[in-house]
Image (tube, rainbow, N blue to C red; front, side):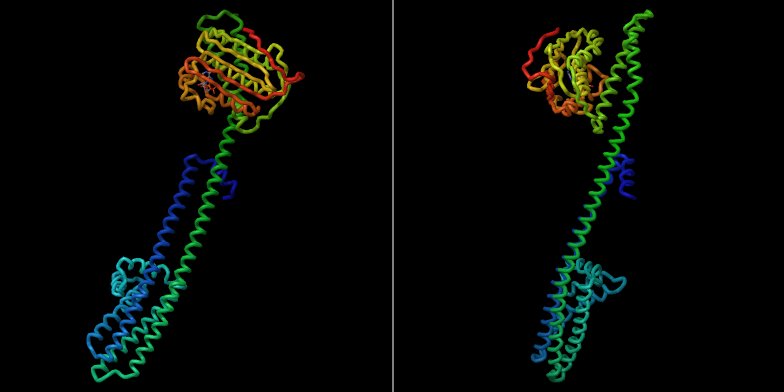
Length: 482
Ligand code: ADP
């Protein structure tokens, strides 16, 4: 599957499926780490057991030779018996080796052999493990060959032992027999040294091989995990973008019919011809209210999707903030009247034109003012002030509404977040407005803050850097317009 196909494939999967892929990769890496650790430990422990076994083997072989030489002069049966005990040790290891070479070894015979060879029963499993897994690996193969050659020399020594035993029974062992024992002993010393150094080289070689395998597998699995994480992240972004594009398209398509519904509902409400029954009047008002809410939702969704997609194009132009404010208030007039709210507008009478993106400012003011209206009970008071200070447009909107509970204030700018008291008061809202406001104010390089006390009211403060047209930036007084 090509890279882009993989992204496409993952984009079509559920979030759970994508998580499963990440979790599975992590589990595979962990399992591999554990198996690798266990395997390395077994191998190292096996090597250590063979090194220990070899020194026992050599010591017994030397003791056997010493007792045999001693016996040849003492003729004491006890010395010969000691010789027999020590020579038996190497025969135990041989039994294990020869059994392990069979295609279907009898593990009981192998274990008996190693224990007879003086190995600790705790090491026997590691000795078997290493033999089985590494007998065809070069170092181990050489060590096993040396071991077999040494067993051949032990056969030789055994024959010499028998010969000495017979010669002692007659008179005395010949000088030649003793020379043969010394020669076999010297050859065994060489073989024992070779065995030790081959095992030493082997343990270093195996350690390096294990390290290389670990490194390679870790890199491979790490790359696999990173690639799947990147693929999943890309697929998620792609999916999110597709969703946002869909929302953007759907909102755009909904805007036109909603404008028509709004416009017709408004003009029907404005005229009382033909005369309507009270029930019809109420239904019309509800229709108008619902279409207003739907329009707000659609415009919020459109703004959110444009911001999320990064397709919003800023348009700086000369703007009269008073006109914007008055238009917004006019649009909200019906609701203001219905709730008998007292609106106090404090703006500079001669506020100059400023340069900024008027669409952004309109969305911010619309959202903040309509929130104040929504969340202020009947006969409450809303104060809106606009001023320009030091090339900054300063907007304050305060109300005597339900306020925002202190514990929920930290989340208020989050997408879709709504405080509990707001949900109780106005069930049909989305929690998108303040998210949009914040994103837009940020885009204009400004700041938005608020203070609120539950059941007392809320003050929103917006500061936006602007270019003031045709005047030096003085201090502007305010005038109440009631
Ligand atoms: P919505 O009004 O659709 O719920 P907003 O994003 O505009 O969403 O506001 C988020 C939340 O902030 C509201 O649900 C409400 O809890 C709180 N809020 C905003 N403005 C006010 C206000 N003027 N008075 C009280 N609460 C407010």
